Amino acid sequence: MHKRGKEDKFAKARAQMVKFDLMGRGVTDSDVLKAMGEVRREEFVLEAYQSQAYADGPLPIGMGQTISQPYIVALMTQELRLGRGCEVLEVGTGSGYQTAILSRLAKKVYTIEKFSSLSESAQVILGSLGITNVEFYIGDGSCGWPKQRWDSVLQRTVEWGPCFDRVIITAAVPKVPQLLLEQVVEGGFIIAPVGYLGVQRLVVCEKRAAGLIERPLCEVRFVKLIGKHGFAQ
Image 1 (cartoon, rainbow, N blue to C red):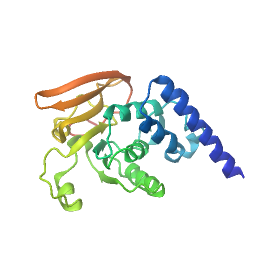
Image 2: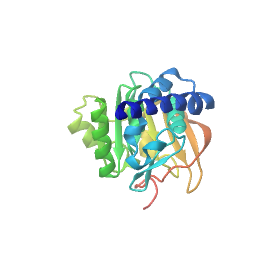
Image 3: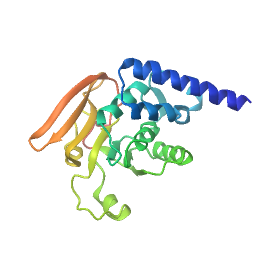
Image 4: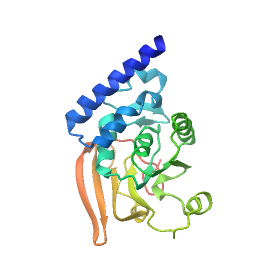
């Protein structure tokens, strides 16, 4: 009875989140709203913070990292303009919550996480939810998806080059790393929080033959992406 009551409480909070924090702030994509209304954010939150699982703010997940606020997760997902055939590169697995949302809207998600403990935890959670269209890698996300992982583990038959229809960077970068831009197909989108400590600009870029078309969305606060083409430790 207690467990059922707890589940019902979270279901109500999830519905309110979708109505007020997402729809109420301009998120309109029906597929994104459906995914946000179905994925149980409480599964990705540390037990000490579960009562705040549907508050519209970030929460700590360990290793100095956070799970992003629901509105920003929904906004970034909506701005990717995902189709069912899209292959998505996510830089910064974190808790796995954003990964889970992407997995419901895309063909395949390739996600990179620097901290092995976070990646391993996310793999367990996503596995328990029956999510199977995600490939995990532990390493430096600022360098993109590694070629050897593409060749040996995924056994792809296509030529190595621009591989991904969409790229989402879930940590702040001083600028979008060139290696990540090179992995986006022409006509694809990349979204990232760009800037230094404090406040960054969330930007979405469309890759065209003539160059990038960049559009700023809003100001955000993300933890730093640590890596060769991100921030130093």
